[in-house]
Image (cartoon, rainbow, N blue to C red; front, side, top):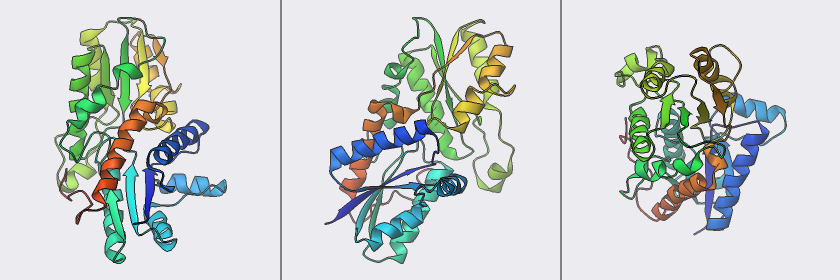
Length: 292
């Protein structure tokens, strides 16, 4: 049974992102000894990569390429944290490709905070975070991890992760750019203006650490990109660094994504292994209603 692996990410045109993706690819190749291809979910990023003559397939295009070169069985592993809107789009592309191509078997791996084996995936990921902290962090210093957040119902997994991490180290905080909302169902959830997640973080920090801190800032993203460099650590007045500094805190950014950490890569490889095992099963794709 000829198998292949498709890794999926939002995309990155930065040196840091390219290096991190290379680390993930090498980990997959070393562990599974199978051909590895890439797909990027961001159309804007695909166009940007294409202009620099870098290969930049969408999920559907990458699957079609793999089928064309005679890979009848493909395990797809997105480097996502939660099964939110972007992951759902990947799943629908996988379903569409499988339906349109009889005999083409596609297995979709779960994101970091979900598992198909019944293990507590949130606790599994939370256990890795204390070792992921900045090397220069002194005992007692607080760290803020910036997540993207989502208006999808799966954003509850960020809260679950924050709780699990706080039990391991109460000085580690997880905040989302988009705050959790009660609106998860139907058009109202999608049309509602995103809530500012910094406001909740501000309340949490005020109750636990007075200025000047210091406060370390780290991204809770797969790779370092625009959100990390601008929204988290940028000089603009609305970045988290600037907003924390305006409250009197001393901020120290640590610009490392999760894929820069071999422990998190290994956890994504565990999700990929689950997907490869399920290639032999009748129903390889996750249920449609996991978090819908």
